[in-house]
Image (tube, rainbow over all chains, first blue to last red; front, side):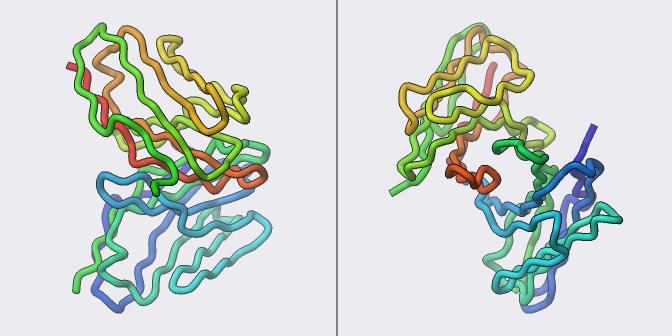
Length: 113
Length: 113
C-alpha cells in the first residue's frame, strides 16, 4: 500500500530548461513533505521541504508546490543543470512521526547538456 | 569529514551467517535511524534511537537487533541471514526538533547468497 507515489520512474530534460518532478500521496494526516536527492553509491541528501500549512516553498533554483486538495506536490528545478542529474525521492512525515518518513520510489532525473 | 559514516560499504555473505553493520555520526545529533532500501527501491524505516533509547521499531524480524552504545553510534546486527535480507541499508541521524531532515550515510549493500 503505497502512501507516497512517484509515478514517473524517469525524466529527461535539456540543460537550462525546467524540471518538474511530481508526487502524490494518499494520507491526509501527513503534515510535512520533503524532497531528497540521491547520487549513485551515496545516501539521500535533504533538498527542500514544505509544511502542510503552506502551498509553496522556494530555495534558490528549487521550488516545491503543495496542493492539499489534490494530495499532490511537485518539485520545480529551474534552470536545470547537468549536476542535478540524480534520483529524487519524495517523502512525507505523519504528525509526530519522529523521523519515520514515508518515501516514494524515486524519479531518476537526467539533465542533458 | 564524513558526517554519517557506515561500514562496510559492501557485504557479501552466505545464508545463515550473522553479520553487523556499524554506523557513526559526528554531527552531535540525538536521534539515529536504520532505513532499508529493498529491491523495489522503497526506502523504509526499520528502527530509530533517541539518545540510546529505542523509539521506533517497525515490523522487522527479531533477527535484526540494533545496538546503540552511545548517541553517536547505532549498529545493526543481523542473525541467521536470509536471501530476502539482501538490500541496501542506510544509517541516518537527525537533530532534536528536526526529525524530518535526515542526514544519511552512504549505505551498505548487503548481498546474501
